[in-house]
Length: 377
Image 1 (cartoon, rainbow, N blue to C red):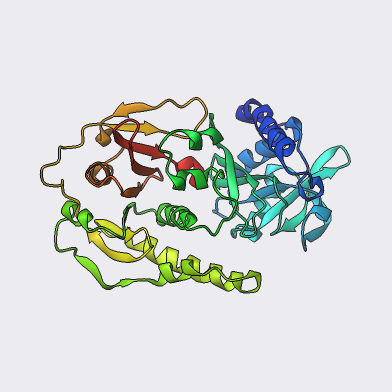
Image 2: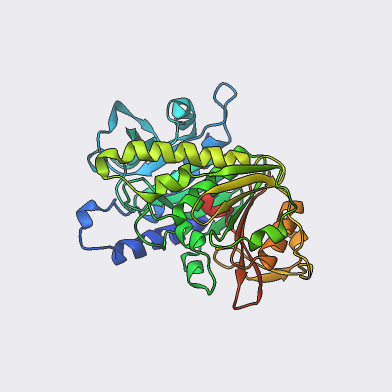
C-alpha cells in the first residue's frame, strides 16, 4: 500500500534546493571538493522517507539517523553494503540501531532510477546535504561547512507541519552577538576561535535536558558581583582554568584529535554544572568562577520590563515583550543581569529544549533575546 506523502517535504524541497544552489554558486573554484547538488525531487524523497521512519519503532526505540546525499566515491573510507538498501521507512528503521551514534551518516545515492542507501560514512564533503532525525517528527537539514572538525550549519528545521528556514542574514543585524554569528556559520572560518566554545557549551547545556543558565562576564571587571547574591554557594577558588588553558594553544593537525576530546570533556563538565539551581559564572577568558549563583537586581538599577526578542528564522519579526513571556525565572533573571551588566552575555537553556542568548543592544537600548534552538539541533 502506498503511504501518504509528507506534505512539508514538498513545501520545503524547492527552498532547500535554492539554498544549496546559492552556496554552490558562491563557493570557491575547487568544485571537485564540493558535494553534489541534489535536485528538489531528491530532497523531497529523502525528507519523506526520514519523516515516516522517525515515527516508527524498532524494538521500542525511536530511530535516530543521519542521511547524507553523496556517492561512495565522494566519501573517505566508507563502509559499503554489498546490496544497497531501499530508501524507505522500514529499511531505515531496521538499520537505525547500527548508525545512531553521532557522526555516522547513511549514504544516499541513485541506483538506476531510484534512490538507495549504499552504506555508511563518517566523512562528507563541503556543502553536503545532510538530513538528521532528531526526534519523532523532528528533522534537521544541514550542510557540511568543510572544516576539519566536522562543523555543520543548519539550513531548516521541520517539526510536523511546521517548517523553519534558518535566516543566514540574521547575523548582519546590529548588535548580533558573535556566538549567533558562529551558529549561523557566518563567522571566521576558523572553528577553533574562542567564540565557538560558547557554541559547544550551548549545545551541551541543551543536551543535558535539566535547563540551565550560564553568565559570561568581563575578566577585567568585578562589577558583575553587584548583580549576584553573595556569597556564591559554589564559588571556585582558585578559578578553574582548564578550558582557558585548552584555548590558549590549539595544536597542529597531528595533535588536534586528542585536543578536541579534552575540550569536549571539559565543555561537558562545565555545561553539566548549569543543571544545578542558579547560574554558572565564567569570564570571557573562559575561567570558571563558580556555579549555583543567585542573580539579584543591581542596587539603583530599574527592573527589566521589556526585551527585544528575535529568532534567526525566515519571516520571523522582532517583537518587544516582557521577559516572563520568554520563559520562567531563568529568563527573567538573565534579562535582568544583562540589563544591569551590559558587557555580559547570558545563555539560557529551558527544559523543553528552547535556548536563548541574551545580550545588550546598544541600538535599541534594551536587552536583546535571541532564540537559537533551531541552530543547536
